[in-house]
Structure formats: C-alpha cells, structure tokens
Image (cartoon, rainbow over the protein chains, first blue to last red):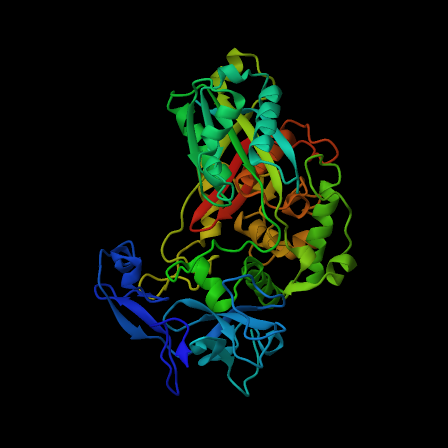
Amino acid sequence: MTPVIEGWFTTGAEPRLLASRCTRCSNVVFPPVSSAAGAAAFYCRNPACDGQEQDSVELSRRGRVWSYTDAQYQPPAPYQPAGDPFQPFALAAVELPEGLVVLGQVADGYGVSDLKVGTEVELVVETLNVDETGERTIYRWKPIAGQEASA
Amino acid sequence: MSVVITGAGMHPWGKWGRDFTEYGVHAARAALADAGIAWADVDLVVGGETVRNGYAGYVAGSTFAQALGWNGARIATSYAACATGAQAIDTARARILAGMSEVALVVGADTTPKGFLAPNAGERWNDPDWLRFRLLGMTNPAYFALYARRRMDLYGATSEDFAQVKVKNAKHGLANPYARFRKESTVAEVLASPVVCDPLHLLDICATSDGAAAVVLTSADYAKRHGIASPVTVAAVSTVTPTFPNTVIDMPLLATDSSAVTGVPERTFKEAIGQAAYEEAGIDPSEVDVAEVYDLSTALELDWIEDLQLCKRGEAEALLRAGDTTLGGRIPVNPSGGLACFGEAVPAQAIAQVCELTWQLQGRAEGRQVEGAKVGITANQGLFGHGSSVILSV
C-alpha cells in the first residue's frame, strides 16, 4: 500500500494531514508545498509576510464538517474508479482547529445521511484505487461514532 | 468623463458545433448595428479568450479583428475564466477613460464540449485542477453542491426552493430569443431529475453552451457628438481579487487559506466583489432595480443575492418564496433566464449579462422587461480569484 500522493498525510494508526508552515509568520497551508512546483510554491501567502521557507507540521486529526455532498456519477479522468461498476462516494469540506477547511472524500460506508454541518469527523487512510503498483491510499474523513449530528 | 454602452449584440446560445469566430462576428456585427457605428470607426477590439479552441482562441482579440477585416484597430485579449467578459470590458473602459480610444468593441465567444468540464490531459501533480479529480473525484457540481448543502443546514433552504429558482428562471427566459432552453419547468420536474451531487439535481445545474456576446463602448462625449440614442452608463466594473485569508473553499482548490494568523476578513471574496462595484459607482444596494447573477446552480443564485446585499444573509429563500426575485417583484433576478436558460459559454457569459442589463435599462427587453429599471448589477466569479461585477445605470 502506498499513498497516491507523497507527503500529504501520515499513515500510522492515527494518521494526520501534513501541512507547510511559514518559518517566519507561522501561516499554515494545505496541501503542503513541494519543490517540484518551483521556488514560488514556498512564498508565504500571508501578504504581510515575505517568508520563503516552510517547515512541515501535522494538522489536527479531528475537525467539523463545513459542508458535504456526494458523487452519484463517475467523475471524468484523471479520477480512477475503485471498481466496476462505479460506486457513489461522499465528499466533505472539514474545518480544522488550524483555521482552514480541507476537502476530502468521506470514509467507505458513510454517506451524506451520516453528515450535517458541524458533524465531528476524524482523518483515516483508505484505499483510493488499485493500479500496477498495488493499492494506492488517500486520506478520508470519517464521522466519529456515537455523536449527535448537529449544525 | 464616463463610459457608455452604445450597442449590444448576441449570437443565440445553443450547441451549434461551429467555429467560435462565427458566433463572435455575428454578435459583434449585431452590437455595431445596434450602436449605429461602422466597423471602420472601431479603434480597439478586446476579445475574451477561449481556452478550448486552439491558438485562434488564445488570441481572440486578433481573431475577431481579422474576421471582421483588418481595420488597423488596437487589440487586446483577456482571460479570467468565467470573469473573462468583465475583465475585457474593464480593459476597454480603461483605455477610453485614458483618452486612448474612442470606440471599443468587446467580444466573447465559445464552442464548448458536452458533459462535466474535465481538466487538460497529462499528469500534473502540482495542478490543483488536476489533483481534485485524481485524488478526490471532485467535479464542478460537487463544489456547487457544498454551497447548496450549507444553505440547507444553516438557513433551512429546501430542494423545493432550489427547484423554484429553476422554475422562475425558465419562465423568465421563455421570451428571450438568445436563450438556449426556452421551456417552462416545474418543481416536480426538477426534483424528478437525477441527483448529480446531493442535494443538486441535474436540472439545478447549468449546462455548457456555444454562444457569443458583444458590446460597443464609447465615451459619453462621443455618444453625444454622434447623436447615439439611449446610451447606458457603465457606473462600475469590479474585477477585484480575494483578500487573504480566503476562507470559503473555491473551485478548484482542495483547501481554504488559514485564518489563524490574521483572523477572518470582514467580507468573503464574493461579498467583496459586489462591495467594490457599489463603492466605485457610489450606488447603494437598495437602489438596484435588476440583477443578473451567475446561477451555475440554482442554489448559487441565492448565495449571490445575499453577496450583493440585495437581502441579509440567510434571507434569500424568503425573498424567492415571496416572489420578490420574479419579474414584477421587488428585485427581479436573472430576467434573461440566467444560466439556467443559457448554459455557460465561458468567455461570452459576463458580456451577455451586460447585454441583458443594457436592454433592460433601455426598456427594450421584450417579454421580460423590468418596468422602469434604472440601475442594474451583474455578478460572477472566475476560477483562481477573478471577481466580476458590473453596474450599469441610466
């Protein structure tokens, strides 16, 4: 099993998203910046800061749903369906304590009926698709069991 | 000095499958005829770029100028995704205000493929527009659905409300000769159409279309000297970008900025787009008679109504239910029929909004006229931080 993209999340028992943090003003960005995108990727986005260096930080594992939806039709390439026939999946935008909202798919087995604006979710890592290198994993949002959904 | 619109013209929206240049020239000639100005007198052509039609689309200003027959005019080409048309108008207006142009022709035209708009081919691991499909399967309607669901959970919007926006716009567009879909719709019909991205049904989401729109801009002085009848004043063109931190998730991004360092800004990006237009025009939202807003989805029309301060946050459903946004109501929204009746032709759409308001303010919007309209506002937003709002007045 390998992450579909390198450096965006950890894969242990309690996985976390990896963000970049400006070494000067501490502004945090996700997805993390990568040198593959060139030097400009490292420029701090805070207009009051001219920082050009970022270090890596883990984001909180839990957040609250900002909004949610699902994909009832197969998205076009480069999306690669997990199987045939296509299985609809849910998506959530989740507000983290670090002050940003991060989009992700919702964990297998959960749909929009399990979510409300404000629902608490936590990060999990699951299989996105299988290719010639094996299972490719991605971060997902999983509703925390036993809570009352509330807005 | 002020800049006025002296002519407006469009090619009907549809799925015609022909070269975008044909549509653009058709709209340009219609706008020039509407203004009573000869092509030979145009000294600036601004084209809205289309990214799906090869090199000719990248140099749209040149493409239209050449197709009309080289007349020596200066040219410019603008690209700002869905906000392309407003940026093209802004470029023409600035040159006229600087005294460097007397007659400017602004043209946008597109030929679009069917289905979901997909990213360009190839593996691009640093391009958010590619990554959102590869990693998340996040289509454009999925973003629209996030905004729609938020209205339901926060403000009590219902699927029936969203369907009612479609019903209203379908009725508005019935008499519009440029609209692609001219057919009444019912709430039951919208709700019976398949759910694409919960809570949005297929009929809540706009199609993509071929089409073209053009306007002729001159100085107010030029219009007066040439005895041009009923010019419409361009009171504001807002093309502002977001202010950090942008805290509402924007297509095609995977996350928002963090507000931890600086706090949440006073206005969201979409609120700032309209606010900048009002400030530039010196016009209060309460003075607006008619609005053309970007209804990529039915629910998004309700967001825009609030972003433009036509009612308070969370009250757009009440406005809709009271019939206030319907023709004959207090503040008709999308009298043209909106994207619901047109489908999106990206570089033409913001110009089409301005064409509609021009005719509304001239009292020439046959079959869909907002009686006595004096002030109109448009709004839309292009990918990657492009704001677009134009205020016209008479």
